[in-house]
Image 1 (spheres, rainbow, N blue to C red):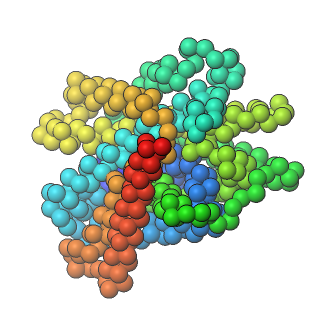
Image 2: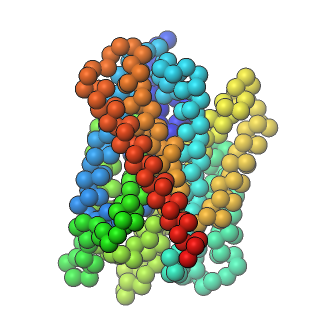
Image 3: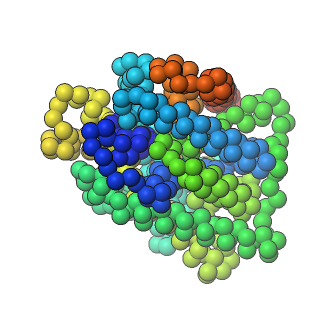
Amino acid sequence: MSPAAGVKAPLLPGSSKSAPAKPPSVSGAVFNVSTSIIGAGIMSIPATLKVLGVVPAFVMIVVIAWLADISVEFLMRYTHAGDTTTYAGVMRESFGRVGSILVQICVMITNLGCLIIFLIIIGDVLSGNQLEGSVHLGVLQQWFGIHWWNTRAFALLFTLIFVLLPLVVFKRVESLRYSSAISVFLAVVFVGISSVMAIMALLEGKTNSPRMVPELDNKAAFFDLFTAVPVIVTAFTFHFNAVRISMVLCAAIYFAIGLFGYLLFGDSIMADILVNFDQNSGSTIGSVLNDIVRLSYALHLMLVFPLLNFSLRANMDEFLFPNKTLLAKDNTRFWSLTLVILAFCYLAAIAIPNIWYFFQFMGSTSAVSLAFIFPGAIALRDAWGISTARDRILAAVMIVLAVVTSTIAISSNIYSLITENQS
């Protein structure tokens, strides 16, 4: 199960032990997993290159993808060995009910954070943002000027009511299969156009010179490097059920868009790269491409939003009302949870319009637990006696790296926050 699926969703599709099922196709798995992985994470990857430098960022993406592949292998092996087909079930077999509850909580936190990030990015595209002392206009403001109806609060509210609400009221996730295919296509459009723009700028000599390694002026700058790690970790969190092709594909896409985005905007790159595409390109075609890039990815996120909302709603219902009837059969519960989730995400996206904070928080807490700490702990616990010495070493290394980098990232953020408030 990925965080983008319900707690009772199988780690092995069609692996029900009561009845055989038609095995899923590799192409179908690649599309579904890629849709889950390539969500909002890709937006902040270019900003990690600014913090880390090109070479360390590439190494970090490869290492995290490799560790994610190992964690998937652990989960699949224990799913085969045990009597359950879910992530929560595997944790329950290893750590009892506490393990199952921890997975539920982390899934809910991660899904909720991602939904908020989606809304922040959609707001950036439609109504722009003002971060780090710079003002970036949204598509609506560039087209029609600045008015009350295209402010961030109103544009997001309109999108929430007339676009997202009709999509999230579906009671079966299968109803969203076509929107998933479209969302992958829109993500490819975004990556393709961004890459072409960067290559054209490179050929014309208009790109910024990227830093190959980070600038370490002082001790604080060194610890700031660790704040980029949670962003990449979050980007790879939705990887359970993954086929290796998806992992390689997503790692390649992440580095490509990170490099091309950094080449295009250099150190002026924002936490949400879409914000940078408001710049005047000097030609009509360039302006049209800028708008297509922003709108295609905003639409992509609008179509992925219902998938994560479905997961979050199902997990919240199971957590809060474990003994109630099926959620789909209780309209009062269904609508209450749906509206509460949408309202909370909307208010959070308006109050904190910066995706970097949410990426760092999730990447240092719930996301890193789901991606690395829990799978490593399952292998070390070895409830079925199938872990090898190599598995235990890798699991221990995975957990230590996750805990150390997350602790340093959290400490660095707290230190930076205190320093900013004092100044």
